[in-house]
Image (cartoon, rainbow, N blue to C red; front, side, top):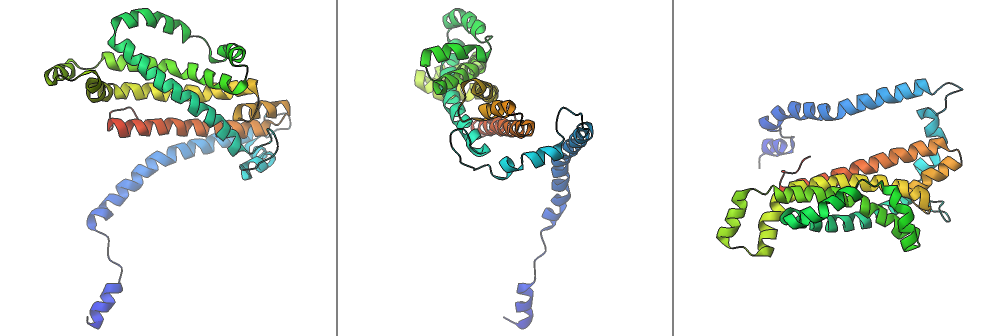
Length: 285
């Protein structure tokens, strides 16, 4: 290799023309997604700071929230005794309850939804009962579940289950009933048995509806566990909020609410991502 060639080999290569042409478009798309929420958040924080900076303001401003609650923000992995735990462990305890109750609701809800979508007799017999039960507020089930289970943890899981199951049932049944007739004709031509029809035709066709119900259900599950934990106690983000209220720690309550909102957002995004991957983009984003 000549000296000139050796020098040229160490020189940085220019990016392809196509990559340079796409850079402004990518930056513009990134700006369109990131800048609006950041600007909105900055405006809200500024308004909040101005309105709550007075000595008679009932709520603390953001600057005071950051100062008062810096310990729980800076050390989320703190481990103490009893319910004296960091935010990570509080949220983890709540997520564990949600995972159990929501998983049971997903399995049972999809099974019942398929039954209602396939059978007119099941629809006529069960739908009125389900429509009555789904209007019962989630916390109204808590005293009954405490009486049945005699323990707070399974009672909270039952409340999550009974809260999340209804949108899964309703959306799954709607998806099964709306399977195109052409798909059913193909199944008859191929002489698919019940299991083959379920796996190859029914589930793929109803999957967008199913994941819509699952997204609604996971949001309701997170709402229900926060409310239920305020009553049953123990380690969990709901009881943390209630305990902070009893101790007049308003800044801690605000920080916990921010955590609740962020975790709920990521739970919804997680189910939405799973839906897009499984349905190949046909589920709603």
